[in-house]
Image (tube, rainbow, N blue to C red; front, side, top):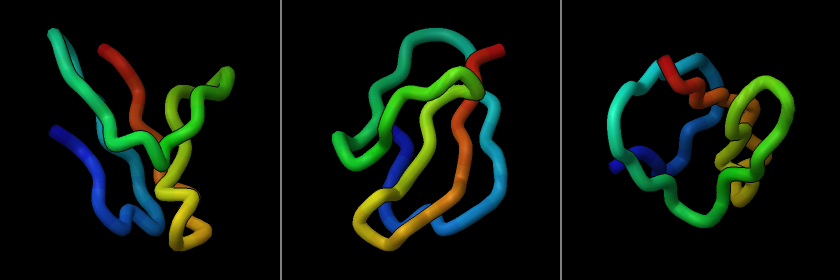
Length: 45
């Protein structure tokens, strides 16, 4: 599980995973946490 006040940085994940609904899908991966104006990116391996 990934999420909760991710304001910056990058996480790379492989396999099965779920994100909290506050992340939004973009070309670069999932960006969030939108609740805290975050710019963190979650990318798949």
